[in-house]
Length: 325
Image 1: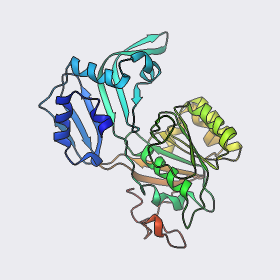
Image 2: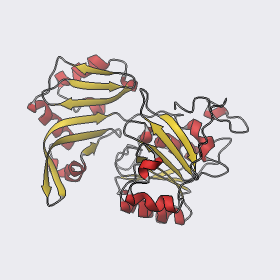
Image 3: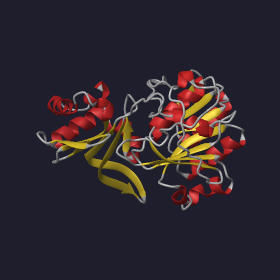
Image 4: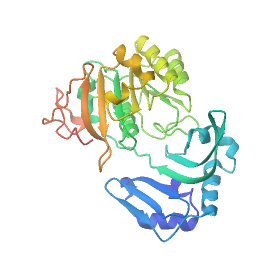
């Protein structure tokens, strides 16, 4: 957690470390708000660092560490409301917004920080493989609200698809990692394990990156995190029409909610996805609510299954703990 602790002044960092101690793997978020206690959100509880209240000088320290003393360097990220740092950790920011016309120009007077902890969880995606693979992979959309483990899940899916197993053929995987959260690349080299046959287009807009990967790296499977705008949808459909399998995630609570978004109408009208994995908020991230086919039939069955990717049986069985990955 060195890349996170360096963001804080010594006294604040020490207070957080003392409170967290050996629970870093359970920590999801560190929320810093000026003039309020620091909030620590774990998998199963929320705690407060009450003995140190951040003031303006602590916020300035955080901003300087995030920007390496150059806010101009982070101008684009500031307009988006988040900054991704080494390790794939995303820092959400809020404060006074300045606009030009109807567009956000910048966020000034940053007084709220949400440090979301990126984690590798090898094997977390293992139980859903039988639902999205049948000799080849299905186009799959992973749906969930924030903090449901979408990025963690899609990162491990990338590794599993790339490496293959006794039951699945290894595939060439192309990852479009616009926010550097999936691979946490440094100078283009992923720090997370994305598998042996994975190529990454890092810090590239999704719509551009999808087309670039199709032309340059000929992936069998393309992985994209958090699609949403019209350009993303157009590029995704173009990629599918070239014969590439697409696995991506999106913010949402249900398919019915997504169908109300005009930009998403084409993917439902043209039945782009064969599988929908719906996640839900719970005390532990990564809880699966539904696994649906293209007709929106629920495929989720809780039967005895495998738990070790190295020693899978000759036929897939559904994992008994699929609801909690």
